Length: 156
Image (tube, rainbow, N blue to C red; front, side, top):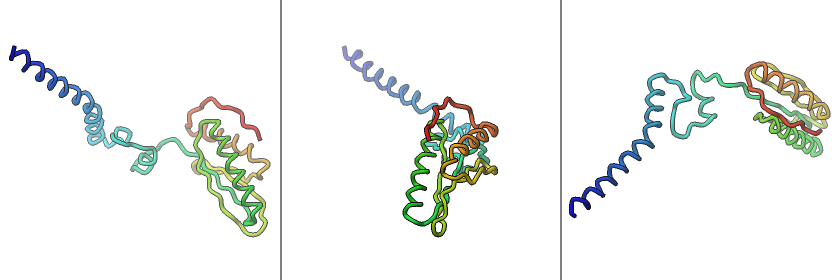
């Protein structure tokens, strides 16, 4: 009887060791491959896109950027914020992340947006013509390697 009781905790210990080994082996192998090759895609434990982009030698897919220029009046600032929300929504419907910045000009300058993908820039487009820039930016992303994704049409 005492042999049966000793073997049960022993089996539980072995099972626990096997479970820990099964959980840690993939991370250990990925870390080893990263150390061997230097490939940042195999760097384990809390890897983020931002961390990949800042690592040396990373040449990921290009990101879309937009710069909205508007006057410094309250009306122009509200127009710029509205345009930012609409452009962000248009790209979100196409499953593309875009970095948008707003720059204020002087006086009552009209609101305009300039898109860029890598070294290419499109615009400036007026607020009423910003959708054409979304189309041009999506075309540029498809030419430089951004994978095509199913999209919903935006309404504006």
